[in-house]
Image 1 (tube, rainbow, N blue to C red):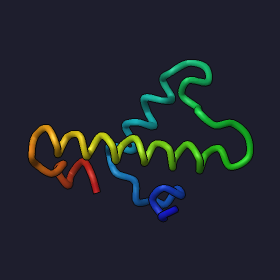
Image 2 (image 1 turned 180 degrees about the vertical axis):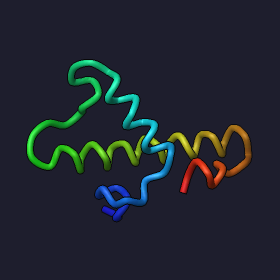
Image 3 (image 1 turned 120 degrees about the vertical axis):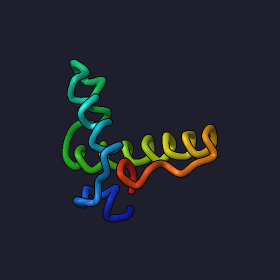
Length: 71
């Protein structure tokens, strides 16, 4: 697991936006994992989700995600 997925400070706007959306969702829907180490697991899962979103953006538009938004 890389530093970014493990909760390093290297999170970009897309990662932070997904975290904010999850906090707005009531109940357990915003927190996929519970218990010890859940924060790291959730962050790793969010990284996979945002990586998928980046790849889809690049596939559809043919352009890289702007560096202001994504690292």
